[in-house]
Image 1 (cartoon, rainbow, N blue to C red):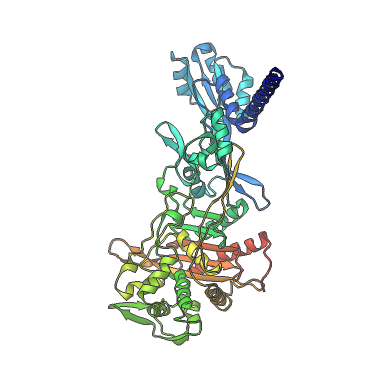
Image 2 (image 1 turned 120 degrees about the vertical axis):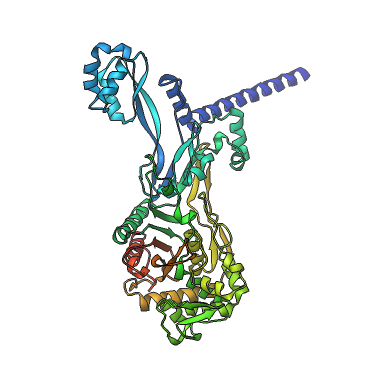
Amino acid sequence: MKSSSNTRNRISFLALAFLLVALLCFVRLFFIQIVKSDFYREKGDRQYLRPSTDIFNRGSIFAEKKDGSLFALAGMKTAYLITLNPRLFKDQASSTYDKLNPLIPLDPADWLKWVNSTSTYRELASKVEPDKAEAIKKLNIKGITIYKQKLRSYPFGTSASHVVGLVGYKESDLIGRYGLERQYEKVLTRGSEMSFANFFVEIFSGIESSLSGKTAAAEGDIVTTIEPVTQKFFEGELMKAEDEWQGDKIGGIIIDPKTGEIIAMSAWPNFDPGNKVTDLGVLTNPLVEGVYELGSIFKPLTMAAGLDTGVVTAKTTYNDTGCITLNKKKICNYDDKARGVIPMQEVLNQSLNCGASFVTEKLGQDRFRQYFNAYGFNEPTGVDLPGEATNLMKNLKSPRIVDYATASFGQGIAVTPLSLVRALSSLGNGGYLITPHIVKEIDYQNKLTQKIEPKIGRQVIKKETSEEISRMLATVVDSKMPKVKMERYTIAAKTGTAQIANPANGKYYDDRYLHSFFGYFPAYNPRFLVFIFIMNPKGAQFSSETLTTPFVNTSRFLLNYYQVPPDR
């Protein structure tokens, strides 16, 4: 009996071992053929194409269209390197030149020098398109060799270039240098062969472990919140405004004020990440990496703080004298004119600096500072883009009331456009601070997917305050912006015109302005917030002249393209 039992145990053990080996073989085949198929395909290319050279590879960056289909913002493309061995066709140098020159233009002097050299290897052309490489191959010229290349491709060209970024050399390695290419370098880079044992570790321990160090399981593609049709349209509107007003720079953001998803982000001057960039200054993203005094679009934030604390209501009145003096410094309305006794609604309707200063005085310096800190101006936005600048808010540590008064209408403090967009979103979304973000999904090479969920932060103002400031801003549009007003949609909006600081004397230019415009819609349940700015436009003093048209065209496009139901 004991012998029979031992026999059964041995058979069971052998069967279990056989099943385990079979499972390991199956998983290994899955790993090779599915999980790392691209890696081994490229490894095969290295074996028969050009053994001495690694073939560059990198993950893709996608935009997702409204219908859910993906569009590549950055990917890989195949090109070819054409080389020659001059010793193999010196007698036919002239005829070879005549055959090659129409396909890959060659300098005659260089050609003669090459074919008469003693070298056995010369690169004639790189990044040759497949159709031309195929045509050269068909010529069957002895001494001409064709090698496969993998190149970074940017099908969107200059569009969204500040978001996407580019790759560049760091010593001998190609790495992400700007934008998402830099931010997600660990995900997008390729080349680490994943060990068989590590494959199981990644499967059973989850994605997070792979992000602590560079393993093949951490490699993947990213899907962004950018909607390519919207991005193209928005850029077109910005460039029309730039062509008309010749600003030093222009930029804009379209964001979902409830989730923080950035649907479009564009700035000019821009660049083509697929070509050599000669002016390195255009590589920085002014919407994230630049700080500016953005003017009167701060007034709704000041008014919301006043409403939230109860120191003012929309009907609270004050005597507008046109100018006031605080700490021996004169503050005036944009036209120096007095309005007399008027309610708070008119402060927004007419964009009155004295009215914003009145609200600040009612709040007091401590509460004003607390609200502006709560809006997030003293912290990073958390956006998944590199190089975010620090806002310049030191005036809110000043003991002088005048510094708080000027901050109430966006002067004396400098912020990134993105941080202002984040704060303005709280006005329409019920009072919450959002985290702006560009990436919505990471698709890892091990076939696992990580969804990037929206992060909703602290509540800055009460829901009732959000509704009231939205009503006030919608009233601004309905009563003072006939070109923006829509019959079937409520739009909450505000313009801003700020003087530009003169670094030479610490004062402000008399003839240079920064124009800004923001609005969200539908006002009481917003799907979109649109922000636009243009620096130093020529021939116009006020933003209502320069930015109304691009804002209106963009808002109408969004409402139609996304089929947003009317709210009135």
